[in-house]
Length: 159
Image (cartoon, rainbow, N blue to C red; front, side, top):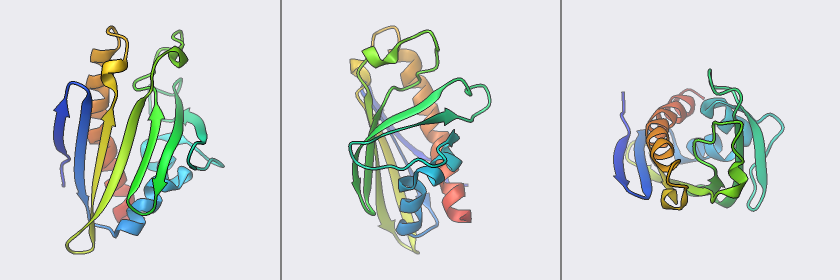
């Protein structure tokens, strides 16, 4: 199986994976909210992604059903870039995460040999999180993006 490549710094998580699917197919898996929800683990039925628009749904991953998938799309440049803002690892119902800065998640897609796609996700802005939240959010999202890249790879290669 194709394992995600890892590059991190104190404020940035970066993961890349080679997907054996054309870039347009991977783009649809990312840019169509319902498709995104399918591989990500969020109920985004009836939702769309559009620049400057908020998209909200429930996480469907076991143990995280109480968590909202809540993003504000920043950019969509088909078929190479999509970015959004969100609150990373916002899992405690008693915390008002709206008082915190959001991190920025950016997906970039590049054509690769053999009609494949190199997908990279970069999440930045962790240094703006409250100090008590930073370690858990950084650790959880680092592991989370590795799993999610495998999920989108499986989805795009089978779709």
